[in-house]
Image (tube, rainbow, N blue to C red; front, side, top):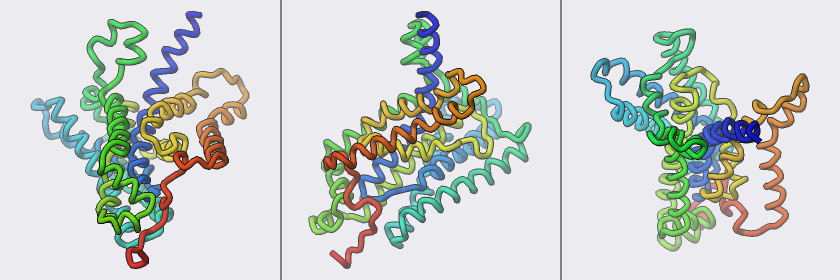
Length: 332
């Protein structure tokens, strides 16, 4: 029994930490998709959030010296990540809303562009100022990773619930706020109406373009925090090119799993995080095939949910009706 408890105390916190980038990414993507836009550029946006944050932290640490202030470092780093991600989302909005470019192609191009730009700036700084080909801002990372002071006094409960940096709690809070906004506010209702039928919303006096721009840019900024968390908390302030992996794509898959509901994305992200790290906690011996099969579980679960929801055909389980479709006001 003790062995099982110890295994869970190691596994569950790691699953939660792994799930936080997915929660930021999926929450931002849900907000974007509610306006009728499918942003496949989320992986690139998260990547840019991470590299922008570490660049902001690096230059602050470099020039602050002995005048370094922890809360100011967090503020500069977070604003840098939000700005970098928001600019990427703004580019996507301009191309797909104003120029009416194909959303799928634009999103994929944005992912490639974001990763390329991130690797260029992150890799350049690592080559110029890093050690061993990697860039580190551990001083700022320690502030991001600082846990609640009473966590160690609560034993297993403290380890499971309170032994995390503030971004973990912020991810849950943002998901709950977005869920409340979409379901309980008039602005959220207007946004959902734009995603369902932009022509009708436009005829009712709702500014379709403004809602699409705001939801996409704000959603992109939220997703960028996922990249920031991965760099500052998960890898303890260390940047290496290509280190983010496929977490951006998992965040998009999580949107389908959560049925476009931010509150469901909370537990779904931690489930996905657990499935993502599960192979590291199971003993497969020399059976690499089984390890690869277990690694596929997040995607298999998403496909199963997609098939089940498609068969049930319940409207509340379907994506916004205009998702992925450009809006031409002249055709109204």
